[in-house]
Length: 173
Image (cartoon, rainbow, N blue to C red):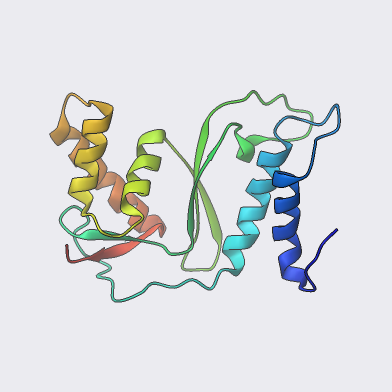
């Protein structure tokens, strides 16, 4: 039973109910909660009113500056490939990372990312670390044999995410 009088908050309460009170009946797919969350996050981001605090250099250096993530962004991990689940298709459990954000045209975008990209974004999320330092930490944590190569590839990744709208630019470190 929903406790909110606001139509827009009903999905939030439904997700809370599923996460905290619901026991799936026998025969329900094991990915039901993950799929519901995936559908819910699109609504959350589509109506979010979060905005960037301060100024952003949209053409700034993402390695030496502090990358500014889109404030309407979610870095998600699921045990199921929720973006591929479809009726009458067998979907095996697979760790899946998704980057979900609202672009400049107010469209919610979904990008499947790998665990390294997810970790990089988690390191950048507080907005206190330059891109190079975050990439070097990912290299160290993953014991990558060629730190310079990872930083070079990471620079290309950061610029791609900026072109897509997940990163807005940078600030001075």
